[in-house]
Length: 251
Image (tube, rainbow, N blue to C red; front, top):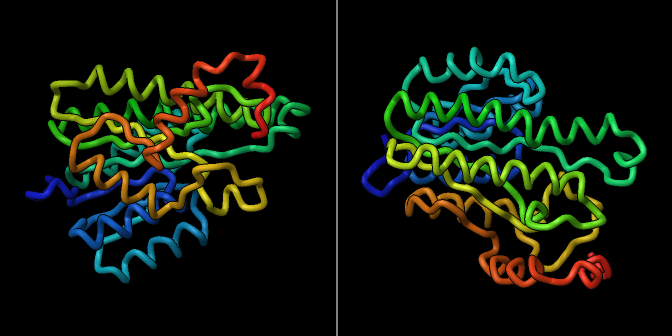
């Protein structure tokens, strides 16, 4: 159960090597989260991430999880929940892809969509059912401002995040009143390994800033947070920008 300050005592991360997920786990462990599950494809990177978190004093375990294998999600995640209640699930996996390459090679584009959307729908529904069965918990879904409106430079990635965002909002409505809370997080450009070498856009942020927003959002039981917060107003304006003008914007 969450403590008196709303901090989860147990955390399941789907996408355990994500820098945002790692920053979030660091922050929550510093605030008394004691059990962390890191779910991801078996790798040295996943084990090193777990080892680092253990140095902070948490009980950290890894579990093999593949977003592209939805048939396994119920079994894999069921085993985690069978070990005890989970206070917070952080759905943090996803891939950016390469727009130019993915346009030329549709199989790559499909992989982006299957990872970011199809895999997330499966994992999100399985996690939501488990949280509802235990009667409490938060499901935090990492969306993106890229899903707010299609841009020429990343519309394949953006479309997958748009689908995820709508799904997560609908799931939150479906779970309203059950004791399960869904938080949708919309970061802007995040300086991380995934975006290394890409042109930075205004209102860029960091994994640590997103982690801070996640913690606050969970404690307040918010349904949606923007990182940074100013993006809410920026995107409100861009959402209504005429298409002929929008396509000429330099980003």
